[in-house]
Image 1: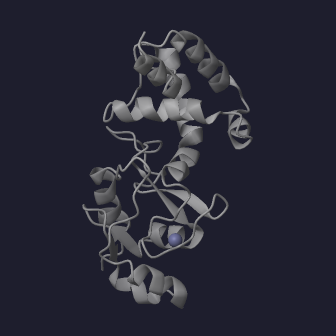
Image 2: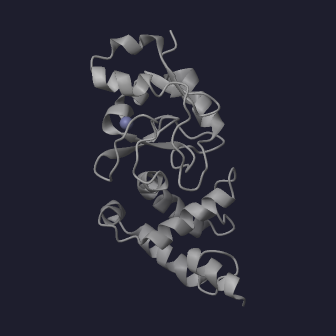
Image 3: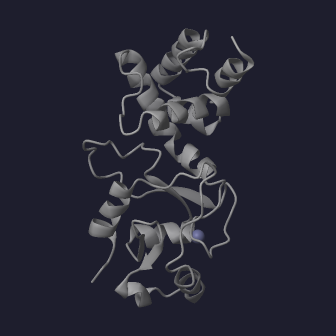
Length: 210
Ligand SMILES: [Zn+2]
């Protein structure tokens, strides 16, 4: 194998050419069966390369969803891991920085992963709840305003504010969002933007447009 092949394998031990693929799958399956999977994730037992490998597989195959679905058990394991690691992966993609352009909040402890199409909506054709392109990294304050529909995004991922915006009491927060209006959200480390279908859903059903 070439040097590039080995580099690929190191970056993603799940790719088809990897000689370790089956053993990695076995590890995944064992982890996903564990009842304490949520705890393990919080304890960061999942190493970054494993989490990255999963997101990588997922992104390559978008909009297909069941990664490597020829193997049902494996697909179920990865789905479970994807669900519990979703929030970690989203925050990491944005380098732990709030995506609102004029908001300067940054740092693991101060940001959340926010669903664009809400996770209490049942999955449709494109399962959105653990979709890597259905998340924004937002600070706690911006998160609340986004969920309540005080601001949303255009198809070009620019901030738009609701006519109800003046209901917000916190003046600083208001200024931050107002000054971010019509500016594109901060880039992810991989330069990908949220899936437009999810953005449209938020604008149509969550945004206070009246
Ligand atoms: Zn913020």
